[in-house]
Image 1 (cartoon, helix red, strand yellow):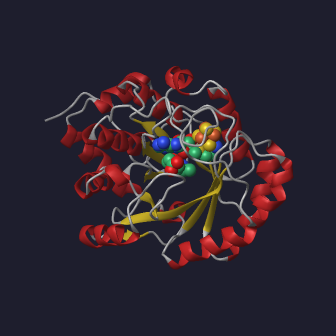
Image 2 (image 1 turned 30 degrees about the horizontal axis):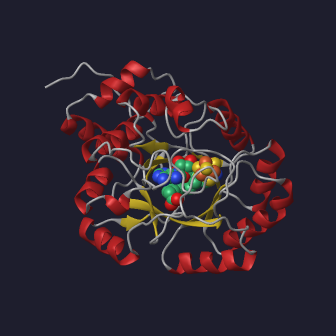
Amino acid sequence: MAFDNPQVDPAHPRHDWTLEEIEALFELPFSELVFRAATVHRRWFDPNEVQVSRLLSIKTGGCPENCGYCSQSQSFETGVPASRLMDIDAVLAEARAAKDGGAQRFCMGAAWRDLKDRDLPKVSAMVAGVKAMGMETCVTLGMLEPHQAVALKAAGLDYYNHNLDTSPEYYGKVVTTRNYQDRLDTLNRVHEAGLKTCCGGIVSMGETRRDRAGLLLALATLPHHPDSLPINDLMPVPGTPLGGSKSVGGIEFVRMIAVARLVCPKAVVRLSAGRDHMSRELQALCFLAGANSMFVGNVLLTTPNPELDTDAALFADLGLRPMTMDAGETVSA
Ligand code: SAM
Ligand code: DTB
Ligand code: SF4
């Protein structure tokens, strides 16, 4: 059976997607959508390889932003205490343990609105120390100025995570202390400094399917598609405005992964937050639909994630292998 929906030429990533085209992909019959996504996945990646990252909160809580999903905003009573930026040695000890546990990339997150120059030397030393261990480095520190992006690159940073999170239309319902353009500006600075971009979003925040398509439209029409594209299922945090949000459900979540794979075919799509409440079978469907990255370790920043043993068993049962090289270098012509 043929479908009159947008055809994806796997060899030529597009930057001129329209909202209507992306919505049409969401509306494909599930098996057709997953088949197309799995086909594109194979064009660019070994479908049995999954990029494995470890996440550490290097500065937790007390954030001046009011993101409605976040346990770390000082605007909400969530029981997450504010702490200071960790010491360099403590971060490097966690990084060493992550490497010993099989992580290929170490991601450090801070509950900041923006990076302050006074913290730059310490964060740079953390990046340099992790890089020296032979892991890829990623940080997520809020908004950046151009010179800060350049300094982080010089310290050995590979990736900067900065999510668009949802559609431009829904963004103001989720956070009011910054706007979409602020996010785009930082992403542009990150790319200009020669860093790889990690940029995606969250589902199950009460948004519509059109908003989910709108997020993917925003990502797929960036001048440079994200190198890493995390799709988070909301970890509902009691005390936050979105603590009672209803899940979009597993089928819609898989559709989100599949459409992300189709519109940004060369991106490493991360099955990010939310695995703790997903079955093994749902996670397997996500990998089939084009997800090829995940966080390992029993905590994300402040919320739970599956145990290492649980994930090791999942990898064994699915015949998955950790990705060993930089994903960009696995791409065949
Ligand atoms: N403060 C920086 C920022 O907002 O860019 C970096 C840390 S922030 C916690 C990183 C990302 O985590 C957010 O952009 C959001 O996508 C994700 N996130 C935060 N809380 C979440 C939650 N409860 N469920 C799912 N994802 C969440
Ligand atoms: C991303 O997209 N998800 C990660 C990482 N980038 C920084 C963060 C998930 C956080 C989940 C909520 C928490 O643990 O506090
Ligand atoms: Fe702060 Fe980031 Fe949480 Fe928003 S998502 S409140 S910016 S830590």
